[in-house]
Image (cartoon, rainbow, N blue to C red; front, side, top):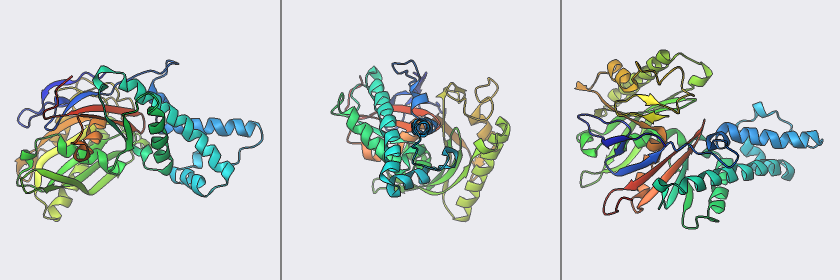
Length: 358
């Protein structure tokens, strides 16, 4: 399990990767479990793992002289796979469904292992996020995994994340800080750092009649596929800050009241001082170096927003993506998220209120 930062995230002395957030307790995140064969679930449940599984099925058919799909794997994108599933021959669709079944079993087994942990005890719903979810195949995997999970955990529901995966990792940033910090403002800046892409966006905040945060939406976001360019670490963070500056300039042109805040979601274990440890191998360069602090670098390059000192809060990307579901999870005591992307992320939450801690 990731080492969690003790204490509450506050603005005047931000604790990054905090256990206690304004609306929830983060019971755990980045649990790294192995299956019965000793393989990490992150190796079995990821975008790449699905493609490996599909390729293995096709290879067996090809060896027998009967692969019905004539397109090479490297040319198959998510939309191509969805099209085969929907419009291909029954045999072609059967190949895709075979991979869906195997992958759903791996996802269900990963969920079962997590639910056996003490920190996950009592979870009522698991949200599935990440880029894999944004496809018909991904939706089928989620649905099938939910059926398989009920064999052992009949009271736990698996559902796809509601926000678009490109946006969920940004929207959740609005729940890293107390809503009172944003009073008098209608927008904030958010960052979602992934193993393949960086995203930066302007979030619009909608307030209810009591001054509480009612809804969060993405006004505009910028995406950079860093994996295609393989930049050095400092080059990558410089590019990130340029994206943030573009977002700031956009908000200014649109006359938005931008709060002096940047929410950041990033893979790995988040230390209280904003440094990173573990789970960051897919990021460009050495982000775990002792002399590198992501938060300090971002704030140093964007020190002020609308003439106010910039404050940034950093948390694990699965935690942030899960927080995007908070408005739909308030009726539950305990819930969780699993994100399928470059790897498998996870986080478990307990809503605050009258619910006792375990």
